Length: 183
Image (cartoon, rainbow, N blue to C red; front, side, top):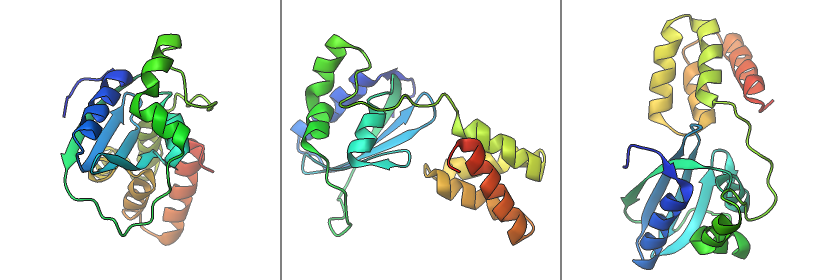
């Protein structure tokens, strides 16, 4: 994995090379704003795209708003039995080269109109709420939770499992989701 953030266009060029080589595996992208994206490749075909909690075309729209990112490819077999949301032709075309054309027009052009992402850092928001419930140890618990998964819901569930009662866990989850804007 390249440890420094680079322009998204460079990251997507890496994806193009993997597609041309007909690779299979997971292409992971981490953004400067601490979001994650995963592109599932099977024999050079894009099977699935996720970005944060978004899937398919909506995930590509969100990815198009990213300026800086880093990426890692994990080669391997892809589970073909899993149900996947198909990617629309426009989103697929943008992901596999249309971003080059859009970058010439506007460095952050999206494949379709998409709302600008909020400037909220989910990790900071979750850590702030966690510390109110668990005190200073909440920072360490957040570090463990975020290190174990990129799925924000799983992070919240893992953190809430450290609380004393089910009621306290429910309050924590509600407060964290509200602070993140996920109601």
